[in-house]
Length: 285
Image: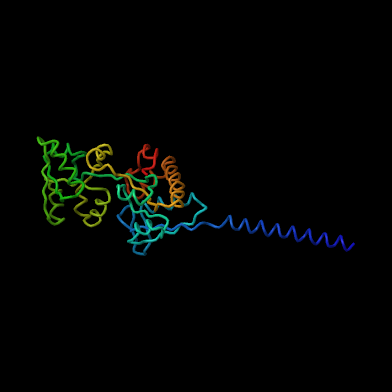
């Protein structure tokens, strides 16, 4: 009798211990891994801070959507001017700030699959359409330029290759309002990135209401303005971060395939800034 009672007691202990063990294991499996990302917080419409301090924009929306599909992780986004350095040293897990590729960054960071492709536009008085440098040259329009600027460099290269139809570049420090009046008069056209145009339209809404822009085709941009037009999340070069980079990249690719990137681009930017299908074939490094 006594032996039977002891046996039942031991059985209960074993069952209880097993239950506790399973509960403990279950608890551990439900614990999310904390992931910290940093951004410098600009340029708009990709990243910006509201008056209440909330971070918004296309980049922010994409990153949040990515981690909504990685339930094993808990994402925290911080605003910090040292975002690149912090990601490189491993202080944070990655950084996003509309970062494009260059050889120097490739030495220090793993690049995710791209989530955006930079768009350049030609802005001119309403009722006109210019989509390439050839259009500007044929119309005899002038542009304002800044030495060392990638767009100015592109026009300078165009002029060297097409001396018979060179575009006049006005290197000046004229006030923005003066330049805008020249755009409105039709004597000049403005070539800018979407980010630059967004900031300018917010600063000078009345003047820009008299202008309209047309997107320069991707192929033309790649051939004439910049080879590095895609933006990526950057991960410091560690074994842990490479694993995370690949997990995140597969989700970004899924967002491209199911149309989510296009939807977010339409919502936050207003034009198609989605990368090309070929951008998802291989990592940059």
